Length: 151
Image (cartoon, rainbow, N blue to C red; front, side, top):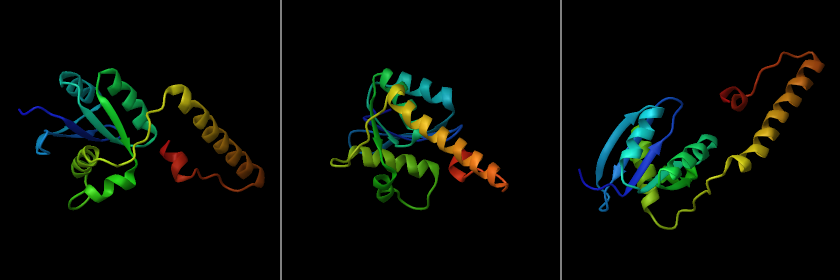
């Protein structure tokens, strides 16, 4: 197998799709794996540039991958979308992330530490509690918002 220089990972709840590119930009790795399988796979590879779409869980994954020696780049989703070819699916999303990471000039999001993520988590939890209390006090039926239900 050619040496992998860039990896794009499409994060999911249980399954992750991984696409690896060589220095010329050719796809040399396409794999679907679970949580532990992802860490085993990336632990066996030489340190390289790993791209993830920025979301709440990407910071955790970024910290874990950084500990393995990889250079982690978190990209906002709106900068990844133009690189996707064809219909949207997880494997094509991973390929688009790998492609976007290899381009210069795309702004990246810094990987946050646990201490940096904690205040935002507290704000979201408190806002949900205040909303639930307000709904219960007004006598309406409480229905969690889509974002709160997704967790």
